[in-house]
Length: 396
Ligand SMILES: [Zn+2]
Image (cartoon, rainbow, N blue to C red):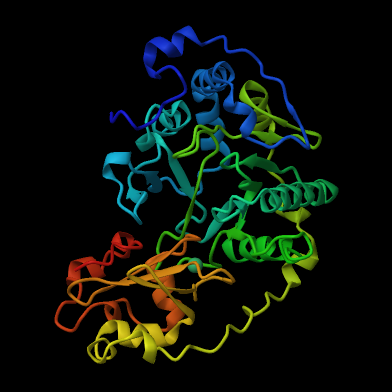
């Protein structure tokens, strides 16, 4: 394990500390106004929280297997700090989701233990939906407060519908995951529509972007056979933060948070209102027309892949050695897309809101090979394995 990798909560993980901390103390909840996550500054409470999650990894693994695993042949996994590159912090792995894999996630002894689950089974069904309310890296407290308020409001709306929901803090800085579990599972098209319907008033809730909803697509396709994944509750992949859970009145952490997670019950899809099923998902806001890229490109570049891709993007800005633009794959107001041309004329793209390479290419209406210079396309083997395509990883 790398020194800079998890854990850094004052004491290491490992079997010795696990048994030492088995009787982890119950930690007090936080009132609504308290900033979530920041109270964990106190090192002894951080250590106690980590110990609680480690001690109860078995229970959490069983609960996760029973309620959240929609497919057990693929999962998302964070990379060790030593394995990461600028745009590649996690990968999709084909492999069995076992109880041991889930236990390792909740024990969180290193970043590589942390995993996420895909939303949709191979037969296009979902066992849960999730709303990812994100501050997109903002350090502005007002934005963090708006995210918290929106998350709590949406949680309250679900309660009023008689739907049990799980609202967890994601990073302790204003990011939240709101999940609804279903039993029996429901068609992914219904799950997708329900999630979109549920966040339809995002602007009125004070959010500056439509929150990301899971499943991210109504159906899996041959091009996207696995869809997207969302990190499980527990430790954050880079920050010293463990999920806190909203119980309708206060934020719970440590053992209280784990108790609340284990109490979360699946809801019958029947409870989904007819309104959700009839909801017409609005077309994305028309983006500003493509820019004149003349000032941005050399003559030679206009004949290269970058010359074909840049004109398709909106709101292009020069940014470091490359460009930024609105991401075409989500309803983007913030120039979330970074674009770089590298030495052999290959174009690398990265959406900081999380869209992957295949989604971006699809939204631009071009094939993934358009990002590569002629004669330097991806090998046939790689083209058959879209799972290997990730932001910054579209390399021959
Ligand atoms: Zn995007």
